[in-house]
Amino acid sequence: MDLSKWPLFSLVSPQELVKIRQACNFGNSANKAIYITHDNEMFVFGVNCSSCLDTGDSLRNIVPKKLDFLQGKNVVSLS
Image: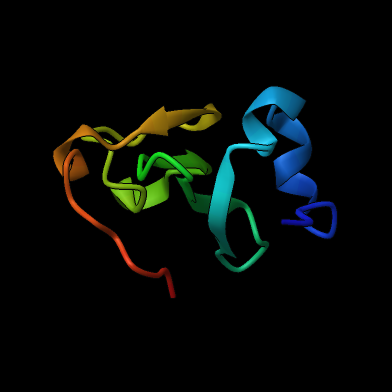
């Protein structure tokens, strides 16, 4: 998956980028992202205003944070 068109993904390591199966960049300034790995793990990162990343806090995350509450779920798509 080519994520180079989204500057936010420049914060993600090359080792992590190759694991991404599907991604969605969102927000007024494209400053938030959610992605699924080939191992069906879900991660979020970016500006977390109003707790929109569902991480349990409102802190900005420049390092992708795994959403453990989706562990074991088969997420089919993002939109």
